[in-house]
Every structure is written in structure tokens, then in C-alpha cells.
Length: 272
Image 1: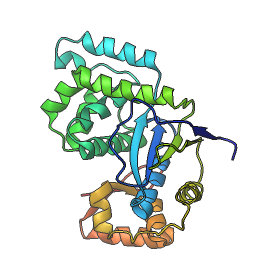
Image 2 (image 1 turned 180 degrees about the horizontal axis):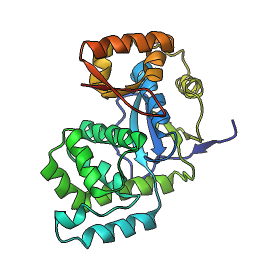
Image 3 (image 1 turned 120 degrees about the horizontal axis):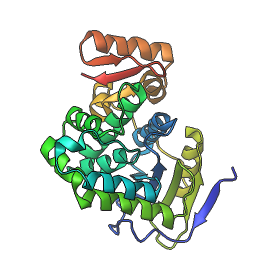
Image 4 (image 1 turned 90 degrees about the vertical axis):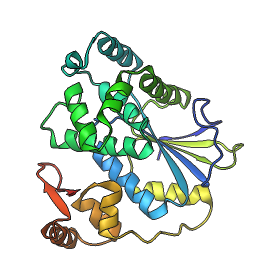
């Protein structure tokens, strides 16, 4: 694997809070890039199996001049009524940061719901009106979300992500950057997409020990944690065949615990 680099230190824009887990993992991603859902699936599987070993920070990456253009368009609106028709590719990233101001879990719910909308591809997720609809679907306080979306705080939070991207010299998404609890050690940057087994092996080598796989939660608890999952994800998490996973998910649907979402690309299931 040629796309591995060592970093001398953590970025100054990152948190200085001491690690509660031995590994700190930064994942640099483009929310709307092809394959972003598969990337989330990989991250989820790592969290479920080895979440005791690492803390996770998702860093949103895009062009800074795109951010400036988007902010100008937002700031030119004098009311929420004018804002709903504004559309720009960087707005989803600002919206995620606005959602995170209601808490990390709220931000993650919004991010996953946004990717769900993008995957189903029935509405323009770069438009403010759709982003507000996603916020409602994710259970956010809408008035607070609208206010935060227009605030400098959300833009600055996104700018912080861009600073981290520059400082770590990330020029390809996705990229994974691993730091361990010894601040004197170099970080490890892995650019590009690889299989789950590659990241599993990297974790094992960084920890210098055999990884202990955690017991997966029940299917109900899994959906309460992630809300939307594919048949392939469920099969991978429980180490069962796609056929078996499909059968079990249909049982949950008949019990009215989950719904099936019509999607051409993937078989999606959502908490009801």
C-alpha cells in the first residue's frame, strides 16, 4: 500500500483534550462523494467491533473558495423565506456543523439522514429547503438549527475542519489519520479507500496487540444507534449471509420495528 505517510504532530486546530482511548482516528470525507455511504458502513463496523480502542472525529473537506461563495449567498438573504431557495454544494457541510451545535449525536443523526437523502436521490440536498427538511427528520430543534445555520459559529466550525485538512496535508478523500496516546509518536495517514480488513490490520499494528472483537448489539439496539442500515451492513456485522440478513430484517419489518426504503443502489432499512 503506497498511500501511507507519517505525520510529525497533531494539527493545532484539533482538540487538546487527553485521549480516553489509545487511538484517535480522524476520517476525512466528502459527504456527497460516490461511495460515501460505503465509507460510513466501514466506519460503523470498526466502531461496533473495536470501538473500545479508538475515538472518532469525522472531518469534512471541501474547497475554501466554495465556502466563501456559499457564505456570501447565505448572508445576502434577509429572511428564512429567501434562504430556502439557496443552493450550493458546500451548504450540506455547513448544515452538519449547525446540527452539531445541538450535540454530537444530533450532528451524527443529521449527517446520516443527509447521506440517506443523497443516496435515494429524490431531492436536492444542496438546497436550504431540503436541509431544513432533513433537520426535521433528524429530530433537531428547527428554530435553533435555522439560527445556527446562519451563524458564524457553524461556518467557523467548518473552517476548523478545513484547517485540519490543510495541516495534515490531506489532498485525497477519503483519508484516515491515526494518532496513538503517546503524543511524541508520529501519526499515520492512509489516503484513499481500502477494505475493512486493511484498517483492522492497521489498528492491530498501531496497538501492537491482538484485537479483541466486541460482541455486536441486538438488531434493535443496532438500529437505535444508527437508524438506517443496509442489508450488507447487517450481514457483515453479524457475520451472516445476505440471504439470512434479508430474512431477519423482513421479520423486523413485519413486527413494524423497521421500514424498507426503496433505493436502486442499495437495500436500505430504517428505524420506524
